[in-house]
Amino acid sequence: MFRAVCRLQWKASFTAVALIAVAGFIVPLLAVQRAGFAVGDRRAWDLVTMLAAVESAGSLFQILAIMLGLTLSVSAWSADHQGDHVYALTLPVPRWYYVLLRFGAGVVLILPVTLAVGLGCALAIQGIDLPAGLRSYGTAITLRFALAALVAYAATFALAAGTKRTAALILGSLVAVFAISELLAMVGVGQGLLTTLMVGIFARPGPFEILAGPWTLIGV
Amino acid sequence: MSTARAQTPEERAWIERLERRYEELLGRRLKSDSVAEARYDTLRVESVLLLTDSGTSPLLLDALDDLTETLRRGLGTQPIPPLAGTVVAVRFGPVSPAWGRLIAEGAQFVQVYGGNATPRRLSAEIGHNVLLTLAQRGGMTTWRADLRLFEDPEPLWEATYIEMATGPLPGNQRCYEGDLETCRYVLRLEEDTAHPPAGATAGLGSYVESRFRGRANRPALATLFAACVERDDPEACAEFLDIVGVEVPRMSTRAAGTVLFTARDLGGDGALARFFADTTASIAARLEAAAAAPLDSVLSAWRATVLAHRPAEATIAAGTQWLALFWTIVLTVLATRSTRWR
Image 1 (cartoon, rainbow over the protein chains, first blue to last red):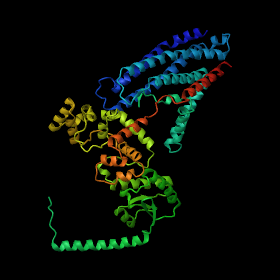
Image 2 (image 1 turned 90 degrees about the vertical axis):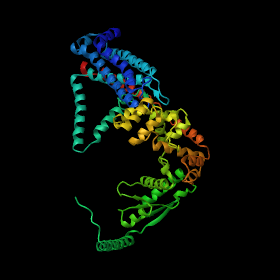
Image 3 (image 1 turned 45 degrees about the vertical axis):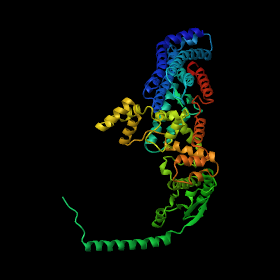
Image 4 (image 1 turned 30 degrees about the horizontal axis):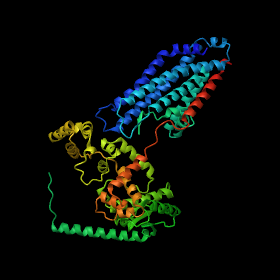
């Protein structure tokens, strides 16, 4: 049954996953080349600028991880949402088991994209003459990407598994908190509200700490 | 068009009279100020004399405990010649002419503002002023390096590692790799800055090309620019930079100052006293005297310390991966308990 669910997931998200995989492969190659780390590049005197360029390109990994999670979760539930979950309800399996099958099928598709990112990082590092004193973080970036995509997928999957009302409630609450904190900041009170919220989400023990980085492929 | 007219003898005498009268009045004012306001307590901390209008202030007394410890830790216990007679005026009110005179006579001045002063902050500010005196009297103008003897050296070492590993120019990289001659140059310890070692200026042509292309608009500059960029001629590059008013990039003054930490640690108590003993000697000679070791030994030890402070690898922090997996499980459990099927 898992194989069938995987096949469905594959059909629903093949194009998007393939595009993200290609992007994940290309980003590290382009990052080191555009920053000036390619062999013989005359910018080697300015490592600070070069490292800043690599670091800023690293933020694309975050975006790709979020996009991958979102794509997989949307495609995981799109067929069920269209059929009003009638097919799922007729299956002789408990609901939680069905949800886990759906989730697992998405997780399987995170693997090839992670592989593409890892391969891209390895090739990018191999193609440059890394100056003494610097380190490459290809493995760390690949592992971070896999975990970030997993958490992003789990969050959006849980949101998509709920009713439209629940999803609207959660997203609406987030938007409302952002709007209120912005308004309060404009009148000079509660400047720390948005910061507190962001820290709660992106700093330990928040769910998206893994997304906060660092995402640089080359560093000291 | 107007022309300046020479003053007549009468006019000059009249102006002099006015000036004398003004000074007389000002003198009276200063005198009354000094009677009313220049009553200060004197406190001695190690070799530093503090003049303060509030010698019994609990804030100041707490700061002094911290300052004594800081001075001993940073400067050692041996007297340092240029510090003798250092006066720091700590004023709890606004500057007045009487206190202004203290500054004019060479005292450092610290003003305490009621609201945000803490013993630690006040102690740091007094310490900063002590270092200013040391820099002014200790012949530090010949060496562009920050004296940060009272700071926690750990962050400074780490910042120095980053500078050495990331540039500017391959000079820092050569120093990283152990070329001590280049280290001397990038730390500004060389007397002869006109002829930098080859390792320190490699890549200067491409640096000049990318940063100063727009400035080579005069014939003389254009010739130098071409020689610098096309032949990568370091002397042409140095001359070009000199004309446009830019120094050949080297390590920051903050990083250069860390050599003094090494000399102090190698030389033990009394190292700084030896460093400041002869303010006319070259910085290299003074560092050797402080460390009681040849400069190359000092630089080797300095480099080893810098390399030992390489920042930790920017891998995933311990526990972050487990936290990510934990949240994945939590969110998946929430998904299985969705109300959609109930």
